[in-house]
Image 1 (cartoon, rainbow, N blue to C red):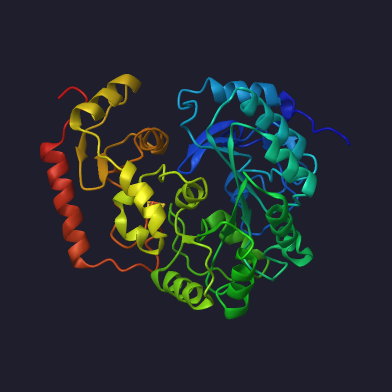
Image 2 (cartoon, rainbow, N blue to C red):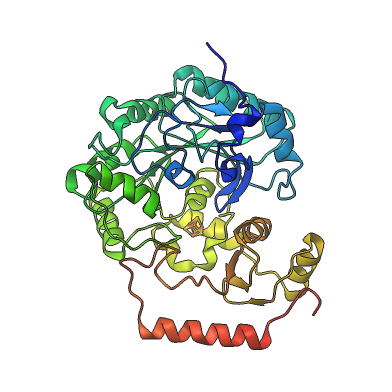
Length: 402
Ligand code: SF4
């Protein structure tokens, strides 16, 4: 098979600089993305945000060796601790030409005897041979997240028409043992796949998996413009940094799930699903946002509760000093308010502590679960709570020095 090319300087200069950043920190893990380009053509793809949607043929930003050494030497990387995601931004890890690079990275990490959680998100073709190879790794903890939305409209998801993802789910289920499998039910969007048939398709697929994680989608002008240009309606013109999942839509999903009688657990958060299948406490410390846990199996609640511990002020100050992070902070009930650290440093601290780290200007309102405000209930009581938190933060917070 023809190998992937490494883009030359001229080609690289035409790529959005954000895509050249091979390592980036997302809430679910430190992401390794040294291949860009995808042929799946999902109309809502996040590559619209980087002006990269038209790049259908994957290509490399750097070699596998360079990429893994960037990962291992990265300031945020902690052996055995940091969750890692591979090829989750601008390509699919199981595209034919990308797959050898996925296996080369995994082998390298496993040979280093690392025990980190590895998240591999795909909607591609996973064969029996692939599963058997994944099973051979001795150290890394692999979770496959198979993206399946139940969307039948090929204009939104061309991949839907050939059943690839469902076949992969069944194959993985048939041959896996150590490797864990999650149905990544996303994006769920009003008007696209919130009808009974679509929901049924997703729940049917879930019967072969160890857990289900359901989420909305990133709705921004860049992908909305494209969707509208090909005649697909989008639910709102309200664009937010967080994923879209209106309260009523979530309730309908939960009701359908309960009515289905399926006994595969359902989670709102990716890290919760991954932690459950790996029999670990949630590495994002969502136990501190306890309303999220109402749908979680009781055995998993015990695991999370047992390991959950707020750091002391002195411990948090030590961490800030160790990494030279500057912020005021207050340790609140289930989370720590900080200011201006940026997402990556917050996720870094969050994964070290297994405790939620929030920014004072990006509040998480009760029952919104960190989602876009569209379709959520924000009432006076919540607004007053936030004003009080801000007052307290600016009047009596600590810093790393006291
Ligand atoms: S108990 Fe809560 S925090 Fe832990 S995995 Fe379940 S939902 Fe997530």
